Image (cartoon, rainbow, N blue to C red):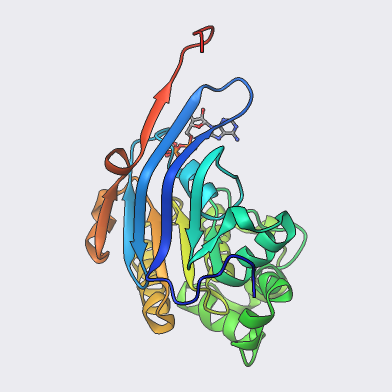
Length: 243
Ligand SMILES: Nc1ncnc2c1ncn2[C@@H]1O[C@H](COP(=O)(O)OP(=O)(O)OP(=O)(O)O)[C@@H](O)[C@H]1O
């Protein structure tokens, strides 16, 4: 398998002595001395707007790399993988619901949902009938089959796109589900359906869930609430500040 794997890790996520800053003009800087999420844990990550939640998720998913320290997912140090191996690792092990969804606009919702399976053999092998599974997931999220199969993703409302992005993250039962504000465009009833499906899938697969939200009311269904300010030290330096 991927290089750097250390067998059965107890922690689904482990960050150690991590330091990250965006290159360019922003002066946002993040330090994470020690962050752990156990296998199978459902963690709700709470933090103010701009506090670095999406940045943290991008490091956990290996989309960005820290300047210092390590990020381990399921015992694999992401820094030990080549960029291509990291992409494969992410496709196999992590279902990501991005804040901006990242759907292919001209493809149908169904094609978008099935896409990760074409990059991830083990994930594909867990799904006997991908189309039926995509329709099961989308039905659970209140999306009509005609829309899922017939429309282009760009023709969907924001709330519908958000649910398609969720089904794409869940298909094939990835070990870790990372969700960045996945209910922001949904009304209360849809939020309830979404969380039902998310919890059900996570538990059925024995997966680990890390979800970011501003909405503290959603936190009660999780095993643990992680306050970003307790685990991450951030700093900003004003423009022109030396150092
Ligand atoms: N792609 C980027 N390039 C440069 N700087 C960035 C980038 N993305 C975020 N930042 C900076 O990092 C800081 C943290 O942003 P981030 O999006 O991680 O916060 P957040 O807690 O997810 O915010 P929100 O809740 O509003 O989505 C911001 O102040 C921003 O200036």
